[in-house]
Length: 424
Image (cartoon, rainbow, N blue to C red; front, side):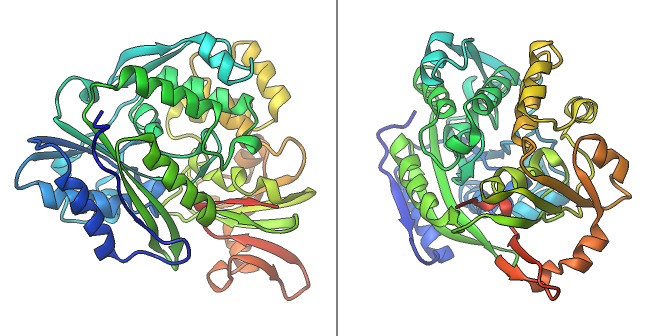
């Protein structure tokens, strides 16, 4: 790790940064890094389209390509590879397709160590007893690159508390054991107590992995705090360096910018999933995770999702969700104990996160040419045709927050659920 490099940052607690300010921070960071001839950029994928990660990766690529071989490996985790159309939309057409590398989480990883069960038991309060093997893409540790720059957004997160930093590497470029173990660990430790916190049991596992197994990797971080305005990314902060302090500073700003205190619970929440960003419930269920704490008991969360085409990001996960559905923690953990999720613990974790635990109803409004009402109801949700939902709630003309419809119905609107956490 490049622990001795100086932190460079710029932020605004109430406003936004200009792109010139962002460039200045990036240029300052580059002057403090060792000279490198082979550089790997690790940005998010299209599912974090408002992170600013695409713009930053494109800027660094153009800045560095004249003096080094630069490759871009999006931190997809278990997500599918980005299409060329998505690459252009996220990174711009000036970044050629041949510079992209794809992380295959099932085949491209090597073991670099193990987080002992005794440590996991300690940080989880006894909820998790087993070792968690740390696997990572071989290119991170096989000396393929002289410098690795991990780029990503810090935002409240259901598994880890505040996303990014070492998660971008150990999950985004990680392997099955770490992805499985940390997702279920987080679910067992109650995501409503974890979300929005810098320190969590899962973060402690990642910290252990970095300290013990990534010490020789020439790795530095670029962390953003961002929001969305009228379909565009707004950057509030950019933080660069290689120490945990960089993450802590970004998290402090993210807590101020991304945690929205509503004041009272809502009987109905209407959340929108932008079709270019969300094509599966595996990612789109952030609409559930991030709004659940403002839902009234007996209320309804309506998720308007015109681009949803599947439940999981790959056939294995999709098939398990279709088979078992979102039935709540007791039912899901019973299936875990019966061995229903052999080597796929991330799936029951997702199922737990995606259930209302019987406290409120979840209705998914989708395009029936992609998913039918029968398919939606089969996994435990209620169904609505997306055309009917948008006719009832014309979100393009509605603002975020409390809205009263013409017939007197009061709803709380969340148009970018992946970018925040809503609490009472």
